[in-house]
Image (cartoon, rainbow, N blue to C red; front, side, top):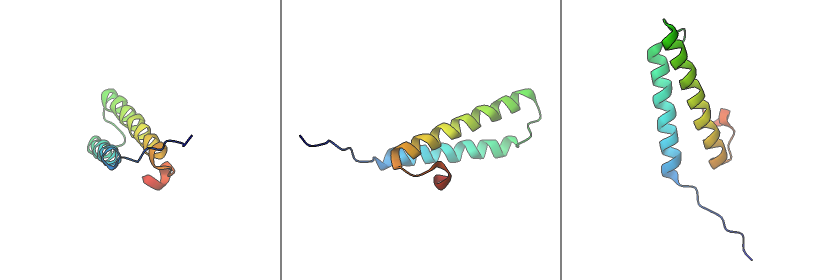
Length: 69
């Protein structure tokens, strides 16, 4: 019985990278110190979302998240 492998879909990797770039751009627009509680909360959400996407890329590509950043 052969082991079934799946090919890495470059579209998924591209989409994740695009989302990471968008979220980082939004963080830059907000500023990293946040002027209000809302902005600080949004900053934390964006950071979690970026980390989530980096972990997905790590899983899909086999590269460490710091190599993908």
